[in-house]
Image (cartoon, rainbow over all chains, first blue to last red; front, side, top):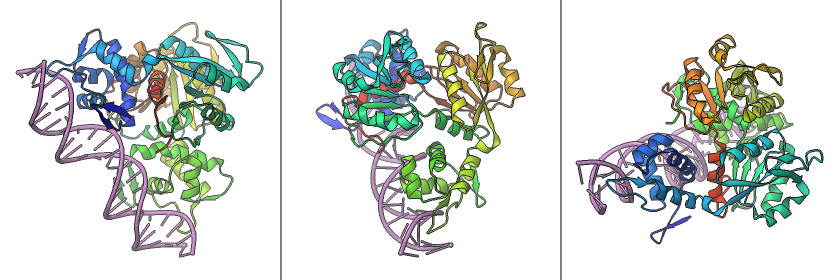
Length: 216
Length: 216
DNA sequence: CTATGTGAAGGTGTTCACAGCA
DNA sequence: TGCTGTGAACACCTTCACATAG
């Protein structure tokens, strides 16, 4: 929920999910001003969509002119809390976990991976980018000490629910789940986003040999 | 578009995206009959949702009884074309590409990765699971020879649009894009699914410190 | 009497169209 | 005049409620 003109509005989840795309488009533009039309083109959405999304949070533009790039960048970063330093822990230093840590190292997403843990003694102590793999046992301590707000689950399906429960109990508010299983979270204050590669590929199979569109 | 009782109905994309979850839930059930209620529980959706989704494709259940697991499995596999052997090519044998190939090797998703290509001479010829990394130049030939219908893009942002264009020109109908950029596809017969880890994590940051729900 | 299949109702998100302001 | 900001119209998806079939 965000405040706007003293009035509370419900922000659609879909809007939140588009903001990072706008943010990226803004950083790639060489210009210092954009219109909803140019920003939309660069991020793959319609101009109306851009205006509506931004208007949920305030009147950032100038009529007849457009939006100031650095000001809008600031605003979106603020809305997403990216200006406050969001820290995440990766649970599971397997293939996907390590790929993810290195990937994030390179990409500078403003979400910092502050710890990687695993249950396997063989990988504990291993270097991974600028981090060292730590024991799963330390999970709760790490989350408290480093003020971690996000958990990324890359363990096998069998262990995922247990990890999820521990993350939630330790006070994490957002979970990115790559484990091929559907998680149950009691606490409605915790947001879970699933990315299931197998499910994704199976759904895509439907469209092999079927008419469909990229972005409707 | 699917035929049902000689009548054509438009299938919601959301329905297609849930089918793989039902499929997984069916394989994990030890039973040989399920109700929409139990199937929904196992996959994380409501019983009404399950019934509506399945009803788009026909009347697979028995009133007062439920659904036969092996029959329903067959039907869903058929709808998703998983019974026809869907083949995919991974473009980009970097960290993410290799993690994905090995992951898919293990998971048995019924979508087979039939080729991995890269532009880097150093990795070309390298073994990757049961495959060998082949030159990017061979992309069109491979797609034609092996009847590949799906492309998985794991190259850096800068090269992604070019790869996408080549995949589309070569006749691929579904694309899974991991490159951190928004792709433009002219052909409306081609379906593109983006998975952008950076965008995903940035969107999640919003929910760190905000009330939200897992599945509404 | 149970659980499916489905029209109708309700909600949520997107597009339209234009008023309002630089 | 040009582009934002926004109510209204629309499209889409989910939930409800129940007739229907085994």
